[in-house]
Amino acid sequence: NVLAVFTLETFRGGTFNPVKILWGVLKNPMILGALGGLLCKFLPFPLPAALLKCLKAIAASTTPFSLIVLGASFTLQGAVSELKELVFTVFGRLVLAPAIVLGAAIYVGIRGLELASIMAFTATPCAVASFAMAQQMDSDGELAGNCVIFSSALSCLTMFLWVFAFKNLGLL
Image 1 (cartoon, rainbow, N blue to C red):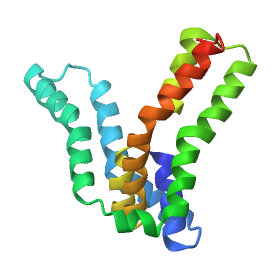
Image 2: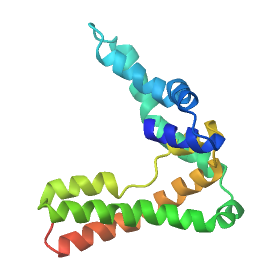
Image 3: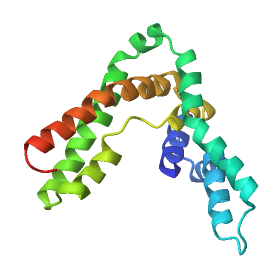
Image 4: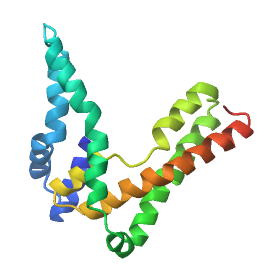
């Protein structure tokens, strides 16, 4: 999240202003939420069970709710207008990046469950939070949303193909 905020802050204004970028990172809601969670983790007392139950229920519903909202804002015209960027991003996220990381993992001798674990976090779709973050930071929210939608839909196929290929090669 911090790297995403740095990137979006850098390209939002067109100039590199370290103070402005650092301020953008410090006031970003996702970063503040992560810092708040870290603070709660180190409290000298446990949080009340009722509060934890409520927070877990909210956390469990955020991704499905975000996907519903994202789907409601989807337009095919928006996807077609940025087709080149969309194809590049989705291909990079689901094929190119996993190929590089998994290739390096295989090269250093990682196999089996460890390789499957690496696959599970590298061959996954774009995070739903990237849509909200891009919108909040005056970036291309429509492209970010389309990347989430298409990478989520296509990841079913690409993840199957990654597992199928590695299973047939005897790596899993």
